[in-house]
Length: 199
Image (cartoon, rainbow, N blue to C red):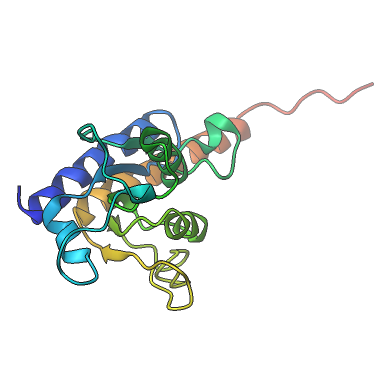
């Protein structure tokens, strides 16, 4: 599989996760974390030679799973402002690997990570972040430059714009429907007869 095909595959999985959020009434952002293919790890190696060792400095004895994590926004369901798709996926991937260092992985997310999620990506040492839709008003990279900030201990390679149109359409449709529902609720409330005053 070429890197381009790999990026498209990962983003389609993330879009499927975002649809789960959509169906649950959550802001439709989806995230998956996949093991990085050998070709990509070779590119990321400092010397251009062998890929960096797995988390903890050892090579896993068993084949790595095809998917380390898959998650979608659950802030409403969990009543938790930190329950973004990326945060949940990072926790899942760390549990899958038994290590918080996700050094040989690729994170796919349908919308550019916010500042909180970008910080978690840096702390977990994820080397590549693939996202669909940029967020020029609140993005952890677009606004704050967190993912490749020179003063931080880790910088991620960014691959933006993968299936951007599909990601935008899904998010736009969600907010259009929410606005229409809010207008309908306001209209219905304004049509109610005034209640009788208390005697």
